[in-house]
Image (cartoon, rainbow, N blue to C red; front, side, top):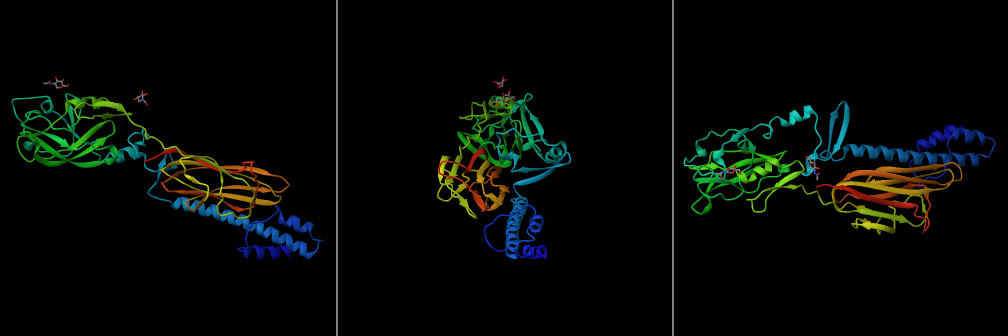
Length: 403
Ligand SMILES: *[C@@H]1O[C@H](CO)[C@@H](O)[C@H](O)[C@H]1NC(C)=O
Ligand SMILES: *[C@@H]1O[C@H](CO)[C@@H](O)[C@H](O)[C@H]1NC(C)=O
């Protein structure tokens, strides 16, 4: 009879606030209470009901959080099969030239390579194009039927177009063609650049047809040359950039004056330093929407606000958070949730059946965009702390900054 009533009550139980004591086995307790007054039995039912409601809410929130994570920013997440396992990757691996990239699966690689000019180019190895040659015969690239992409070489060694005005009568022609602009970075993809022909003291006397350029992995460039606007114009190969072909993967080729080039170790993204650690110096009873950890012990980067209890990601990157509490009251569930951009993502759950206390520490690591909001909420229960205990805490660090 009572059990039946409980079933009805549970289905109706989506009201009231604050979760209260519950037991592991309702039926056992109710049987034990058979000879007790109906009021006591009813009280037990209500207690169990509230406890179940708390559990239900928690489960619901867990499910919501999972659903939301799956729906979150499809642009950032790509799923791929690797040896039968589903791998979920956050962000593009190509976010930074400076990073060594993982080797892709062969199949994926070949898919990517198809149509990529970095793997489909014609070798253009003509020594007369060098910036330091002065030949009697003048060449004109207008007479060439350009098709597709080209990679420049000088006697078998990779090099690139000059980014500076080249003296006239060099590069085996009258008016040497140079790139009016910088070479792209790899993450720029294919770019269009103007090409200039130097003539009669005017570095851009001939504004030739623009070309396309792409930077490839391994410090080389491919060019989609086109017929220049007139004769005698020819595309130059800068012998000063021969050194660039010898740069290692973790180096890039740099030049201040565009004349002298050298390999330089790639600059790591100077990571911003973000670290915070704060505690709440008292007890927390029942539902607390946002815990305002007011005692701040560390706040490097000032991303945590003690007045609001909110951490706001100042840069895009991978962050790690932790939060702790001490729950203590018999038969009570205590749930603290980490909330990221309004999604409940991680719970610290404790349920004590005997007079005791339980310490709980939960951690969470995630990718955050700039401006993302993180805080902790107490959904139900009771957390214990005093001014000196540092038991209800919240902290975090930026692990890796991303562009
Ligand atoms: C041009 O430069 C290359 C590479 O430094 C060198 O081997 C070659 O001798 C130079 N040619 C002339 C004509 O200076
Ligand atoms: C750069 O890469 C080379 C191998 O290509 C390695 O020997 C060297 O230690 C690397 N340098 C740095 C600073 O990572």
